[in-house]
Image (cartoon, rainbow, N blue to C red; front, side, top):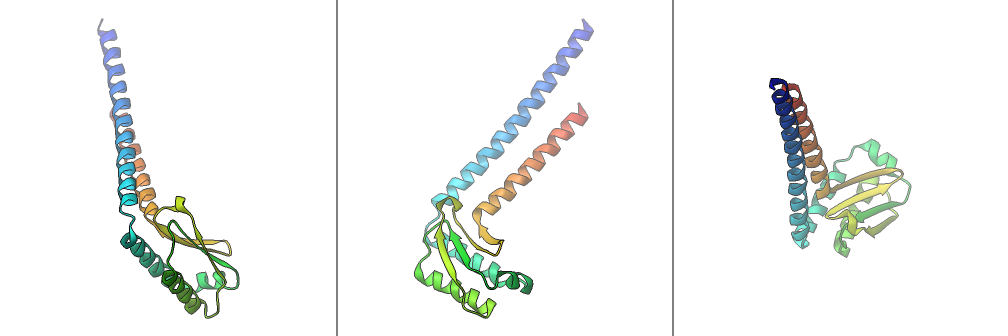
Length: 156
């Protein structure tokens, strides 16, 4: 009888641990989904301008080796939203200043990219977007859940 009770308790603990791990994972996924929806809902003109500003700061901070690798070829700027003409001109100007030459630049709208902007050329991809934060958060949550599961398994 004692052996059956011990097995029953072990099975119950295992089921509880599995349930809690699944619950943690679902809560983490829910938080990420809500955060993505909130950002998408806030993706008005001000948020778009902020995304472009951060993108421009990022490309201004690139080192000389990166600029050398971008020189000479056609460059693409992809955004999840329509870039106004003045923003396109500003991006063009920054690229020409950094490359010290005229730039063949094509702008593309990619709605699936969300609230982000990226520069593509010569096999390089340099970008920024809110989705980067969500990917980092997702990775951090996965690691935390794995550590939590590993800790529960070692205690069991």
